[in-house]
Image 1: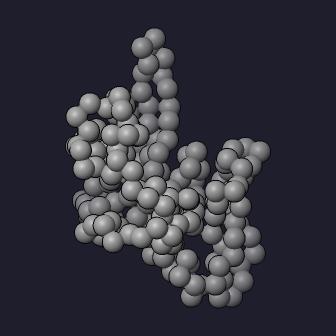
Image 2: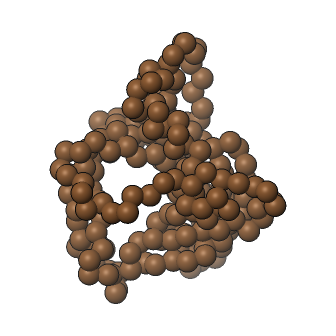
Length: 197
C-alpha cells in the first residue's frame, strides 16, 4: 500500500481515506483515494495538518534475541521536532526512525514516556541546524466534545507511506484504567477518547 496518483482535477484534491467500513489495509486491500473539493472542510484540515504527522518505524529485540519491527504514527508538537505519540509505540524500542510527510528521515529517541497516561515524546537526534517542523495546534481540553461531534484522525495505518485520513464521530470518554487494567499506576482521571474512525 503506497502512494496513489490519480489524475488531478482543477479545484479538487485526492486524499487517501479509510472508513470504519473498509477492509483492513494490507497488500490485498490498498487504501482508497477519495476526491475532495479544495475548499471543503475535510481538504482544508487535511492539507493544513498532514505535514505535522510523522510515520514512526521501530526496532526492538524480543526475549529470544530476535529483532522485531513495528510502525506507528505521531505528530510534531514543537518547531524543533519533538513528537507526541503513544507510549506503547515507543516502549522498549532500540532503534526509532521518523519519516516526515516531505520525505525527510531522522533517527529519534524517547525524551519522555508516561505509561500511566499512555503518552510519549520523541526527539530527533540527528536534526540539522535550521531544520524546522510544523507543530500541530493542540486544544486546551477535550471536555467540550459532545457525542456525535465530527472528528478527523490522521496517521500511517500499517506503516503505509501516505498520511491517511479517517472521518467519523466522537462516541465517549473511557477511563484508561478500564482499558489498561495491567498498567499499574494509571492516573485515575486519565481518559481515552473513543470515536468511530
